[in-house]
Image (cartoon, rainbow, N blue to C red):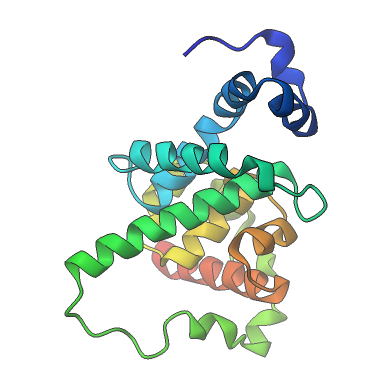
Length: 199
């Protein structure tokens, strides 16, 4: 792939969308250059590093096919891209799970458990659940890699997007298509799970 010019690296996402209308291939090069690393890390942590390259390729194919449908009034370009990445990774994991565990019984609660927000946990400040040192560790890539496999997918998504991609809970809610309170609840529950793991 040809290298991206230095001045392209300072282009805003909005400018890239404008460029796409004039020069689609050049715009896609900039998008790939800007987001490949983040998307790879995101998908690798939700799935695994062996499958991540294939998932990332599928993500950028979907971006290429659907970029004309991007609506800046609904979400930022980064949020839109990570929504595609999240959905592509989820589809990949679902297909794999259906092939490997099609005969296994599922838990009666499932994702519904996350919708039933515990009012007590909802009001506990996250900072009280773990020492500050551990919260700081969540921003460390090596630490994230070590603990993520011990958490359920919904918790992984929130932690990676919040601590690695530095997204707000509002942005995460748009990507996961979940209410803000649900995202906050998942974050708190993930923190509580980490506390159990690290104790």
